[in-house]
Length: 404
Image 1: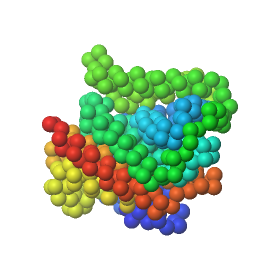
Image 2: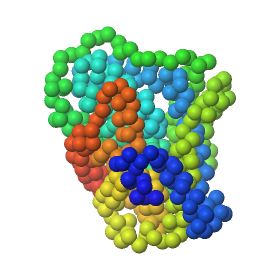
Image 3: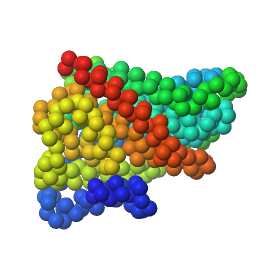
Image 4: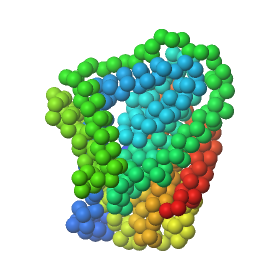
């Protein structure tokens, strides 16, 4: 299964990663490597529920054109290349902390290409900025990407927003600056352009689906509100669970939109299947203790080793199944918050190393190629490798300095 996952990214195999994962889960069930009750018990309903809710919100934003309009207005403030890239890095980066990466990759690609055409900036610079922003920004939140969600839920973290914020907010902000400086270094001609024209940025707005944009606004407000309650430790005497955030966000769309059936039908069902199958397969692998035999003590207790291992292995297998296998070993070794945050940061920053390190990178490239633009593996790695190495160093130093 792991070999197929790696090979399908560099070959012409027409296999989706969810199909590989589902095939693996079916195989271990048929072969008796895991019992049906254990398989059902292995599926983390909290994660599935959270993802489903966020996918509904994301699909609503895509359908309504809500994010396109919001982003267009936001980026119209830019008057120089420096300002534009900073807005992309920090704007898309902070959005990725509350929305799933794939949604932003879908929405952001045509937007940044529109900006590249309008301001006569290299499309490659804009695509790289978007990819780095989405990956880097998602590090600092427990709901920024699926692997962070796994780290937060599976570890039983009581205040995930506080934990992620304390450990990862500041190094992530520094990582944005690193990405900006290296983009400036590799694209000096684009950063020497004159001041942009003042006319507003035009973006394609989709049909207003019965006030769907209003419902999207309410969804974002609810995400931020419930997240803020969670970060404040208590709601009354009850901690706010992460799945409640996505449920609250999806409620306005499900209750008040006439398009609810189509939105639910169009959400990313393959990813939900991927996660359900992954939980079954990873539980089977864990029970065999096969994976544990390749891991020594330093790999699960040393912050730099966790960062390095997460970044490297995530290039060959998806970072989500890697976290699903690796996190229990860290917890079994008495894992601290710093070690768990190193796992979240390393497995996520892996997406900045190469195109293959994150699904959002692949989505960006695929959508760019529809518009006649692309990034090659080497073009991405030329900037991605130094960016990743410097960012990992920042996380290493910060997590090592924390007193807890």
